[in-house]
Length: 284
Image 1: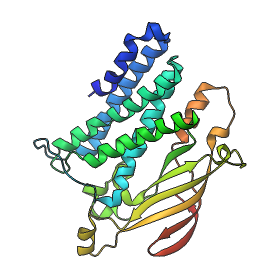
Image 2: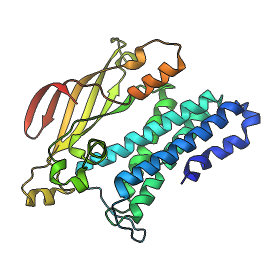
Image 3: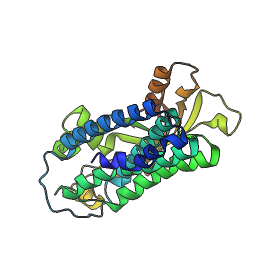
Image 4: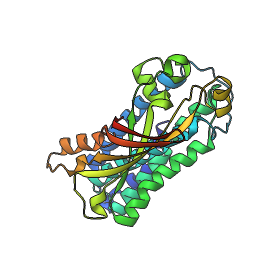
């Protein structure tokens, strides 16, 4: 599996002298990333696939399931794998355009093993929809870099515990950690726009649009309806704090700010759904 991480970077490694790459930093990045990636995949397999039986590899069309909240998870992951890889390559003195391109390619490829896991699990199956979402997340990063030479709109994630996981813990999670990954009812995905990059606006304040869903004990609408559950989509408008507005020269603090900025800070929000309009003083 680690080949999916190392393969797209091997070309850069071969060209590092002509590109004047900082060899020490580049090797540190490769070793650290490979180790972290391996541990992450091992943890994901334990949480998600260890209880599933194995089957021959197959594809499965799951595009109509979970109100597509799971697809946004793939989009979000691919974006940040791309963003993080590109930042690390630039730290290694790789030219910006090459770093962004190889970051996006790597961001897509590192998620391919998830589809391999799905393909061999009798509970799932590899999904072309997931692969499209992975590609879209990487393209969303690369497109902004090509258009603006910076990222101005970032995906963010928030989660709140719901009562649905207790109804099907084997599917929706049986602990806080597994529920964060599995209970799509509690997940909200956001696009947070750095408004001061577009108009006159407070530098520390963003506007965010969010998407989630409720009532999903089963994957498909007909299954939920047959069991008496009312699954529906939710759309949100909210404000968001831009932590990157914090000025610091500390590389450690910058890294911590980058990680924290992947999460949507709870804030007032307006919810729109077919059940009407609702105001939340703090939306997670």
